[in-house]
Amino acid sequence: MVDYVSIINTMRQRVLYLRTIDQLWIDHSSIAVGSNSVTARCRVMGRDGEWLVKCYVRKRRNLKAIYKDAYYERELGIFSIMGTIEYADIVLLPWVEGTPLDRLLGSATADYSALSRAFDSMALSLLDSEYAHGDVKPENIIVRADGSMQLIDFDGAWLPSMKSCEADEIGTDGYRHPHREKGYLHKAIDDYPICVVSLMLATLAADRETFAPMLNSDMTLFNPRLAIARKDRVLLRAADMFLERRDVARYRMARDMQDIFVVISNLRDYLRFAHAKTVEAIPLGAEAVKHRNMWGYKLNDEWIVPPLYSYISDVSPRYSHAMLRFFEHVIEIPITG
Image (cartoon, rainbow, N blue to C red):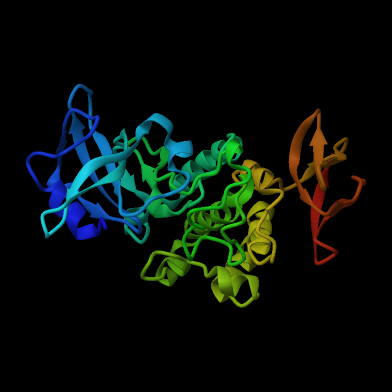
């Protein structure tokens, strides 16, 4: 049986035994062990640039569907300490240059505002795509030199063709919803982890001095198990902060993270409007408009107050007000002529 030690020892050999690929030259200093594989940076004979080779310890059901031609079944010959050889599955992908997001968290030089905007932009693209990643977390996000972000490690991905499949993995504690199970495999599996990472970065950007010291040793800020029990004090404090700042998008994200439901139905709108400027006054002539199941104000067909409210009043000469969730909070917004 293939094991981690045997894979690492094989990768350190000068010559690798491959069934279909001509040859790989592995950067030994880049060898890293994951939860179900060993990865390394390499060069490939006949191909330009640097590549990522990922060698699996055990068979995974969905890898062929996910990686297609980048997946090589029984490709790399792994030698055991007894001298026997067994061929392991590998994936070969272009190397993504940059810094993993988890290494930036907690750094004194981290620009959390820029990271928040970059993550939300990437997350919106992911939500609008035809697939789901399956394990969104800082460790799987590369921050490029230009500040943009790219996801890596799609082993837990969902594709439309996998409607009847069971997940090989269910995400990472600290980012996944506690009620997510292997049978729960569809487009919405990224909702909760996206919400967790987005809100963490926004919280650190809003009040670094207060919340940065609250980062845990594994660079998480919130605890999903405590969150759905309404007992995560850090999350509750963040929610209060965003409410006080009238950052309704972030406040709603904090509240939805405490829900027992895995799907966050309005996540796209939260991310879309999260970085919009807070309107201090509403001009006369603005109209209350419903978008999906939430309300906002439009003027000349443009949102001046994003549709993030459960209820809003018509604009009157005196004031307007908007309500969040079942009359829980009322926000009065001045009117300007």
